[in-house]
Amino acid sequence: MTEAARRIRTTAAVFELPQKLGILQYVEYEPPRREWCTNDGCLYEGVLTAEGCRRGVCVRYKVWVHSRDRRRWEAKEQWRRRRDEEAGGCIRQQVADALWELSEKYDVGVWYEYVRVGTWSHQFDVFCGVVVDGVKLDQPYCRTVDDCVEEMLRDYRREVERMREPPEPALVVRSDPAEELLREWPELGAFGTEWVRKWLDLRDRLVEIAKVMRRYPWMVDVVRQRPVSILHPYIVEVYVAKDGSEACLSLNPPKAFCAQNGSAREVKLELEFSRYETYEEKIREVYRPKGLLAFATAAREYVKLL
Image (cartoon, rainbow, N blue to C red; front, side, top):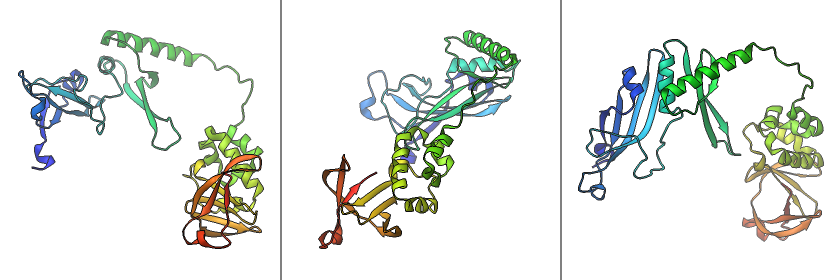
């Protein structure tokens, strides 16, 4: 029996807001295993979804639910954790009900914002809140629907009063930090202003890259001629031969651009770690060529600067 054949879809009445709006709530579940069954019945677990818009209010639910009789479903802590499915939501139930109460007199809505929390492009946290008559508010922390309505109206009136106040005159006009960094290290201009602004939180790494590019000016022309808008600063690698005869810039390993006497050429640079060694008063990694080049009599050793 295939995976699709074992899944069962049914309707349920779990949340009040979709019922008020007339939006159906569907539960998709699988028949439980025998070890989940006890004397009082079997544990049914699945995902509830409810999505649609009515009267200008849109909802989108996707939460874990469970049941013992497949008639009454509850959205509580799941009995077994499954990491391959998302659970929960951003707006709490009492806040959603409060928005429904306010929709008769105000234009209400929900705002979402995705904020990057790590150095990788896929690491995000989602933040959300409510909107009342076009005024963006934080999501209230309240226990009941009435408390949520009162708190949202209080925040809404406070924001409206604040918007009516004249703005304070700016005493000091701060310059753009990215522009300041580019004035100090113009070599970073090869990557573009937007790239520098995007990775400004890795300022120390950007300065290290700029120092090496100032030491080897030909790298500026190589970077300027390549697409680097999605390049992460820690992908940029620079190796120099221990005898000083060659320097290599890698933007997309194992491909690299190596130069002798300022003339750069594209090569395939395959290296393997050899040891740590003091170079220019710093402990750095030393690499040796691997593959056929490792057996050449004139095989160079490379020190990693970046």
